[in-house]
Each structure stands twice: as C-alpha cells, then as structure tokens.
Length: 170
Image (cartoon, rainbow, N blue to C red):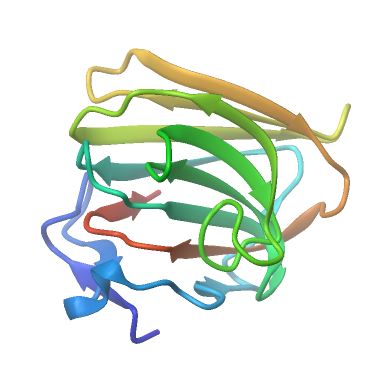
C-alpha cells in the first residue's frame, strides 16, 4: 500500500484518483495493490478506467482484473518502456512482462500527454479479452485482443514499474 496514494490531481471523474505515493514514482511494485471480494470482476462484463499518461516518460502502469492473489490476474498495461505499447498480460506483479507476467497481446502506439479511457470487453463466448483505448477527444487510439481461459472472475488491482501519473476508475 505504501507505493500508492489518493491524489486530487488524477481525477477524471469525482474528486480523487490513484497515483504513486511520494518518491515512489520511480519504483517497482511487488504485487501491486488489489482487492478481491466486493471489488470483483467477472467474465461477460465491461471494465472501464482512465489512465493519465505523460508522453516520453518511461512509465509502465497496469490495471489488473480477475485478481485471484498477487501475480494471479489479467491486466491491461499502458507501457512506455522500452517501446510505447498497449498490452494485455496475465500474472502481473509490476509491469506487462516482469517476473511471472506474460504478455498475451500487444499493439504498438505513440502516446501523447493526456487522459486515455480504456474499455475491456471480457467475453465467455470465446474467452476473449478485447481492449479499446480512446484518447482524450474520444477517438479510438488503439485496440488489441487476446484469448485466454485461465481466470473467469476475481478482484481489481493496480501495479507499476515507474508511474509518474495516475488512474481514475469507474
């Protein structure tokens, strides 16, 4: 928990968002922060969140879903190191490909500074995870898809390896 803080500077909707705390923006989380139980996600649902990105930073934030425990999850990561990508990964503890994490789909992008809305359509009909990322004008910025049946429900979480900006979730 000490790597994270609520922050009034990273709020798309409402009063607060989530960011790295204090001097932790250049650190790596070891498992991130997550909650299971009441903060649950399940297959056949749509998950939406906002991620603020500063172009040129080497941030690697991930939003986890279907969290079973630390390192057992799916995640959508807006990575900027070593290349700008949107990744769907599983078993994330910090970024899209560190430690046990495995990228199951990626697409190359070029980030601009601003808010990005991420929509995850997670479907049981074909075990697909379909991600659409919108830029701050509402235009489609990127899409990527993966098929995986490892998890079908679980909690929500956040992790990073460098995170100078923040999230807002709804």
